[in-house]
Image: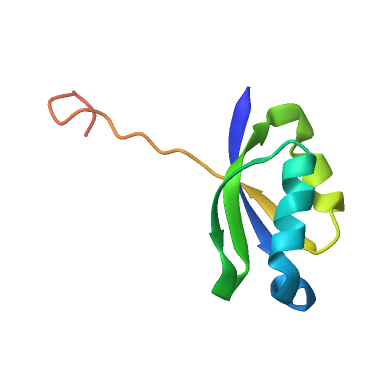
Length: 78
């Protein structure tokens, strides 16, 4: 099942972020957005392959995106 992730690029790799994107895609990540000035890449990848993204050269961190769902306004939750 695909999982949404945010990948942070090392300061040294920001200048070659397109190479990092290509390596992530080669590793199975579907890239949605590349925020070049701040070195972030968002997208999705199969849950079982998330950990392997951290091994890509130029990747500083991989964070799984969390989903928060609020109850409907008319629910009994207070």
